[in-house]
Length: 142
Image 1 (cartoon, helix red, strand yellow):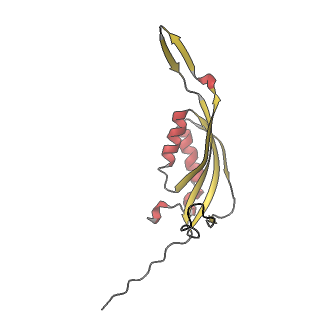
Image 2 (cartoon, rainbow, N blue to C red; image 1 turned 90 degrees about the vertical axis):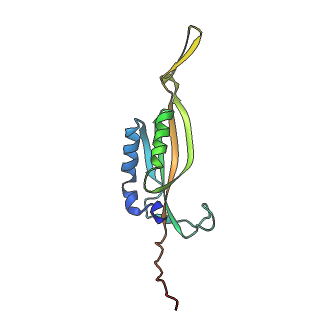
Image 3 (cartoon, rainbow, N blue to C red; image 1 turned 135 degrees about the horizontal axis):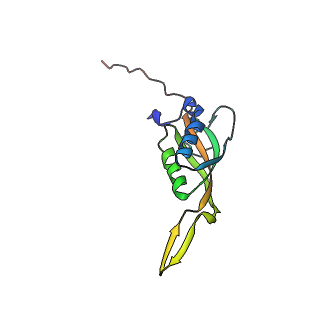
């Protein structure tokens, strides 16, 4: 079960991994910044529930993308498949450019071509174990 959590080594390539995902989906990454350039912080504020306090560390990153709804959706679905356990917070999307979509009325039918451009911003929280669980030696009962 501990394999679900990120490792500091996996975080070293997270920006590269996310950039590849965004490029492959033909979206555009406008911004990527670490909330804290230091080491991951131990969660102790109860934000993930009181039982997690002191057991997990987090590293937060802010990301901003532009693209169509389908491109942004594809990026998010692919992010779910990454090795590190990522939590998406503060998700916001807004219409940026409606001129990429055209609606026509022709012979009694509406036809739509193109897709509007969206700007999406989100915070990604990568979760790691604060300490690796120690292996307890089994004791044999006689």
